[in-house]
Length: 115
Image 1 (cartoon, rainbow, N blue to C red):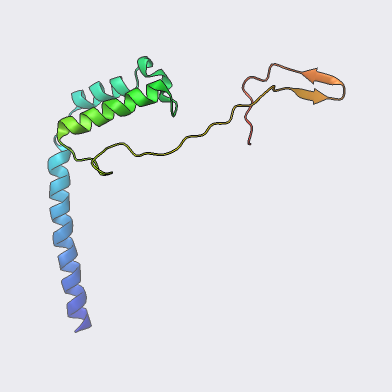
Image 2: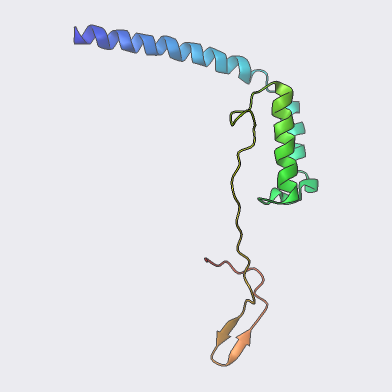
């Protein structure tokens, strides 16, 4: 009896996988090289200023993606929106220098530090 149940579950999972695979293939075929090139060109454009989190460029990229999803007719998963609210915080170092003995060395503009 256990073997029969196991075979039934195995067959059922294969049918489900085949259906999911067919759906995935259907939608994957809608993606074109030209669409990818166009969208990535916009997202990677210099006009988006590197898309640093919280920056104007990142907000422009998020707006582009949101508008694209709306054009496709996708419903927003978070209270009808494609935006997920979260709070940002940033830490900016003060005067950066290194002191060895009595000598002070400046010009450490690209120092990696952990706050």
